[in-house]
Length: 194
Image (cartoon, rainbow, N blue to C red):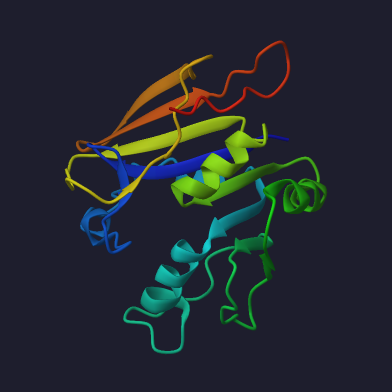
């Protein structure tokens, strides 16, 4: 079982703009070039931060969503938030607060040998890294720049550096980078903070 941060990013390193919007990403049709189908097949549980969930609620899954759709995940989903958020009755959404280690232990058990996906945001992925729980980072780079916004991973990770596993071109626009998070002597690497 691995814990994987799988996300898309602008060329200049942002997963959302300063309003937490991803309309810049939604302009690209998949066109059959995505690695998502093979990725989601290996996922047993997933988690996301409150901004990610709220964006989904506003745009896709809430009763007044601009582009309504069914709940997109068959897997149990943990939403990390310090606030009370609405829940869809047709989804297995569980809310968590505090240290990611507590929820991760339950997620790993529920995943039953499959991987755990950290959907986003970047700070949540950083919390998993800080706790020594993040194993892989898979970032699909999109050919746009935003200038500012929500960074892919707002952490300084320099020693040991991430280890590149693969680089994959997907169609005419996307490049996917796959990294393994390195450990020091088999233990979690401490965050390298400025």
